[in-house]
Amino acid sequence: MDRKKVVSWALYDWANSAFATTVMAGFFPIFFEKYWSNPENINDSTFYLGLSNSVGSLIVAALAPFLGAIADRGSAKKKFLFTFAFLGILMTGGLWMVGQGQWQLAAVLYMVGSIGFSGGNVFYDSLLPSVAEKKKIDFISSLGFSLGYIGGGILFLVNVLMYQYPQWFGIPDGTIAVKLSFLSVAVWWAVFSIPIFLFVPEPGRETSLKLGEAISQGWFQLKGTFKEIRQMKVIGLFLFSYWLYMDGVDTIIRMAVKVGSSMGFEAGDMISALLMVQFIGFPAALVFNWFASKIGPKNAVLVAIVFYTIGTSFAYFMTTRLHFFLLAGMIGLFQGGIQAISRSLFSRLVPAGKEGEFFGFYNMLGKFSAVIGPILLGTVSLVTGDVRIGLLSIVILFIAGGLLLVQVDFDEGERFANKYGRKGI
Image 1: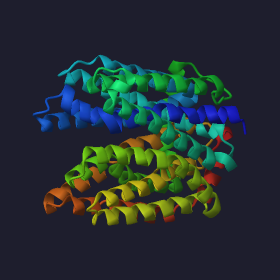
Image 2 (image 1 turned 180 degrees about the horizontal axis):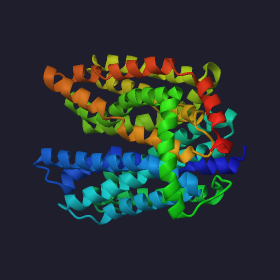
Image 3 (image 1 turned 45 degrees about the vertical axis):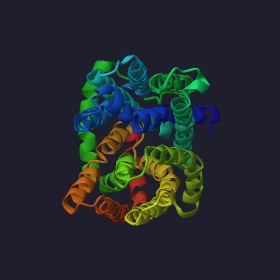
């Protein structure tokens, strides 16, 4: 195992996770409502923020498999990764210049920045099989997620301190501190992305095509992959299972702050819980890899699904800050593990030479996750008048995803991947 190559690959997770924590989960939603939009009309700001998220996710979801196919045919995974990362970095840094009340510009920059973040992950994930040996793939996938948690958590902690104690950093006020936080994310993302471009080689093909030819052949390859996924029931079954249980995971990630607020918890509790998840997630992702090596990666994911089901069920009875933090701790223990091992499980099913395209499908489902969950949570909460019952409804997604995962035969899937590997394309 080439340690320089592995660490360089994993550091990209450290780099871009700052966007997920400080921008997406932390400051942008609050700052958009209180500073860029009209704080007197929360419904408008919520709508425009949701629209920005949805449009960006749909664009990436629609393009991901096609872009992955082009990258495979033209040996251009790193080029696409660089393009999307540069786009995300540029847009995130641009938030520094957005003035008060300019919600339209803020929404556009955030949307395009999210496209850069999510689009880059398609090609980052597709490089995993070329970086990791088969016996190390669970560990290396977990290493990426664990570094993402600690990297994003460290910068978010600094950003929170900048906001709460601006005088410590020589910053005039909290508003300037938040805008500087967006700039710091862009710099962090750019600097720590350098190793993956310098030390991780582009996976080679016997023949590398020019862009125009790659687009043409990528389109035919994409149609072929649709047929292969339909024929290969193992991949289809796993992707359907992944979509359901990850929908539950992503719903909790995205809606936890809103649900906590509806239950009467303070904003400070939300920030503390978010930091808690980040710093627990760092060692937990690595420990979960060890756990997966003992009982098998598929069984490890099933265990995580069981604990998510238990935790979500217990959340129905949550009444105190202690309960809230205990739930955050449980999420931190399993969130990184279920993401990392799911990624490495899928990599076992990917035929050599089609990493970009297959991970395009994988990330497409990742973008479409948290589609059913929030609607289910919101609808049940509205009908029953109780957000606790709405949260309890998410258990359905975990149970359905787990039952489907039990039926996935990964040995059969690996045999198919080997049969339709690079030589068979």
